[in-house]
Image (tube, rainbow, N blue to C red; front, side, top):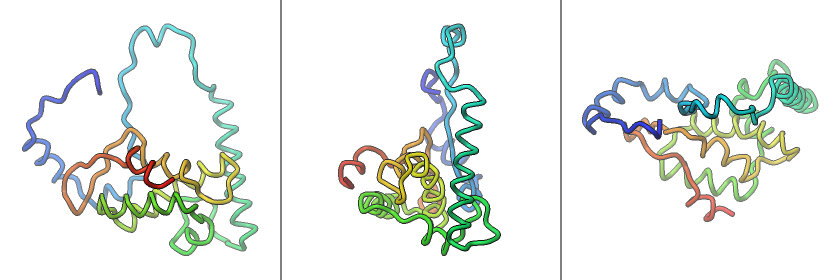
Length: 171
């Protein structure tokens, strides 16, 4: 929470993060920080979408996924999360900018093959929402710039997520 500073010492943070298994963290698709809600925000009118609208958008995304797999002749897969390496290669082509971003993120943050697959799988529905055949730089940047801290299993420490400095270099 940005309104409350962490009072932990660096060694305490390091000791805590060592308890978390890198392969376990690799299996978590999205890490999202949820900030505390201020009283004033709760009293105002909700600015977001209602549940029915969000449900419709999610259903539309599922239909796009199913149609893609059916048109491609892939059976047994009903959602992006179930894609393997072959399906990712087939159904998630990356634009040139997206390839550059992912290449830099992989090398700078020592991301694993599982992390690569996870990022591309999360970016695919973002591209679908924009009605894009290829996963664009915008779609790929969504899972790499969420308000999260990505755990690098090789470095055994928390690292900053991919940010705007990569964005400009990849366009």
